[in-house]
Length: 491
Ligand code: SF4
Image 1 (tube, rainbow, N blue to C red):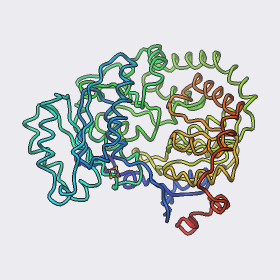
Image 2 (spheres, rainbow, N blue to C red):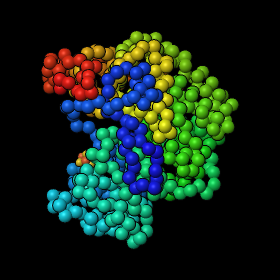
Image 3 (tube, rainbow, N blue to C red):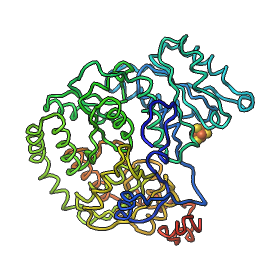
Image 4 (cartoon, protein in one colour):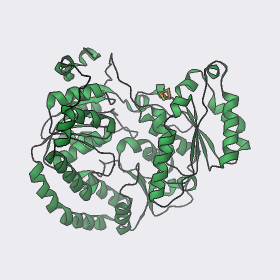
């Protein structure tokens, strides 16, 4: 099942990509199952709460300036609004830009679940336009609105002629998918269907899909040396700018999970090449990625000169820190792309990856190919390390950390590092997606790891004063055997 922009509802990752959230095995088995189509989702009889794709879709869209988001949902589903808007306001302020987007909820009530809330939604859409005059209105759907069968598409059709800006449904009911990254696709689907226009001409510009533009300056400088402009999305973009992304030379990304839908969608609909290599984290990732871009924009020589320059500047320093990191044992818990990309960087820095917990796994991406970073890792890893796919199941992470007793735990979701630290494991929360970007990022990550493992008093002191809720019985359970027969045992 591919990308179908004729349909209002995006197909879930499970339907399109064979994505899973339950698996234990190892990196070589995962890569092989991905290639031969044998990957199956394993069941759990116990599960902790996780994130939902509505949160993912709507908070990602809220990156765009001067829009309105209306979450057609009970108030609890919109609890993320204030944090999301604060975050994006600060990101805009960092660039000296105004951020006027609003994030609203329809506050569906118990009686709405019986009688429907369609008239209320139409009225809220109208009032939102009159009060805020946004440049587009995105209407998100929730579990409740999905369960009662609220026909949001028809409701929007009934009033869209009376609103002078696009009003676009975003189908992101939390229960539709166990993979919260489906929310990224729902957001991209809404942009591709409702905002992007056919190209007027080709522009000398690269689309860069990311989260927070943390390395904006150096990336713009780098592409500037190659003679092209960079357009970061969606952070701090406008609807007018997004309507022209079909005119770019190529789409590139910091994360395969984040970009599969938009990148492949732009390629499918408008012929904008999507760079599908491993992502630019660490040394191999950066060089493979940049060379691919160089080929597309016909700047091969300039790319080689840039790589040479960076190597000279950073490699000697990286080699020096590597000496101090050699042999450290690392466990990682991250989203599907970063988990395996950062594992590659850890191995480049001379450390041993002992276990990777990936929050989900896509058997293939939207171009029908297995994720390249997993195939690369399976071919190049010195050890066939263990892998589990678990949607941020913290009880499993603490079992893994207790079993493998690593020197370091790296995670991209703050909630799990807190628990690891309370357990006494030195941890780094890799919030910034650029923490291992290119040579400079690789060096900075190496320094951050060195700092963390050199002074372990914080973890020692904290763990000695905290009693965790996990029993010895739980710590003695073998995490790798939890899924035998397809069911999670003993939990
Ligand atoms: S959309 Fe569903 S899963 Fe998401 S917050 Fe609301 S009720 Fe929870």
